[in-house]
Length: 163
Image 1 (cartoon, rainbow, N blue to C red):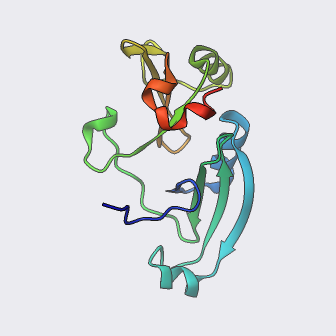
Image 2: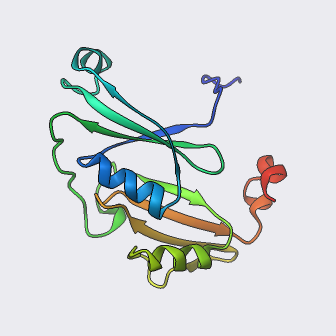
């Protein structure tokens, strides 16, 4: 059976946000993603896409591995998200996972920049060889950091990129 989607580049994820400037500062200055571009989309085009009846601004960010996150701020403030106390308290909850090297060092660097972790302790081993830490961006979106003792065992298809 062949895949229905014939991907041509790594997947991109979009996050609706209320304050694009604050989110952009967090993702570039704290998390360390690179700004690729920032554009505006007028209301007529935005409405045709089904994203919003109003125009919106979008900032595209890229990880060091090549995935992208799109931060999208509609011209009219979006409704606030309803979040549970725990990450999986609400159906439809999503989070972004970054698989990293030196999770303990990454956690320490983020904490030195004011990031507070949901995970306690952070990082923590959830099963042999798998370490993680959860935290949130300024608008409450959940981010996960994971480190595998053996990344090639987790993703043998990507073992070439593990170094």
